[in-house]
Amino acid sequence: MTTATAPSAYPPPIEALMPQARTLADQTGDIPSRNALMKEFRIGAPKANAIREALTAERTDVDEMPPARALHIVPDLAPDTEPDTDTAESAEPTDAPPAAEVIETAPLATGDGHPDTNITMTDAEGPRAALFKRLRNKRSHDELSATTNPAPRRTRKPRSWPVWVLAMPAFVAIWSGWVGLGELTGFGVIHPLPGIADGLSLNTAITLPIGVEAYAAYALAVWLSDVYGASVRRFARWSAIGSLIFGAAGQVAYHLLTAAGVTSAPWPITTAVACLPVAVLGMGAALAHLIHANRD
Image (cartoon, rainbow, N blue to C red; front, side, top):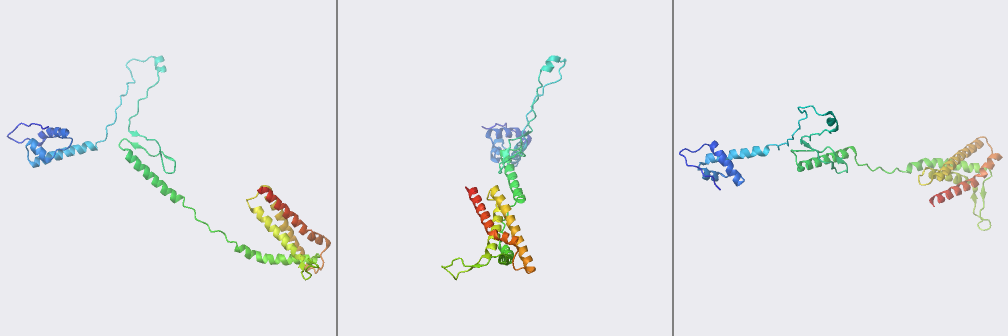
């Protein structure tokens, strides 16, 4: 559909052609081309280009205009006549709806499962802008978490060879002390298999360091372990402490007797040393039974 223009001796100015150009643009749904304007209004190319530029500028200004805000009618709260007291007290106040300037969206869940309550979408922003803001906040949260909570480093397993270095000189001193005390209290060389292997001999003094010190180390390991129950660890604790104290007393007794030149220990020391193997056997059997009962 075209708009008819009356022929004139003088070409009309651009201001006079702008209303007709807007009507033509509304009919076609787009800005007319230069040739269409030249043909419709019978004008030259410079004037057609000027009209197209003006229409383009108007379209740009309309697109960049912010959306109109909704207007709300505020009721008149001050009537001319004084309202009835009973009616005014019984009537509930009506709150006017707030202006729709900011539309708060529901909390959006971030990547770690917690809602991000700082994300809001104004009337000038769309869902795409809110999505970009959500992704940006999530990336910032991940970078902050990686900075404040770095990945734990793998720790090296502690080596046990220093314990063996410390244990070797202690083992030599304890072994010699118990063997020497055993010889002073009547322990000595025996033939365990007479008539079968007469040449086989065994010094019973070695039973003291093997029994007492080995049980002390075993009970100490059970006490410090968190695998067993409270009753097992309690028995292991007291028996380990008792074994260590008794072992230290045996070393002190041997060195005192040797320094005094005694060749035979007094009977109280001999009695206590003679009971050591039996005591070690009883404590070891009791601890083993407690461990098996705890596992069952």
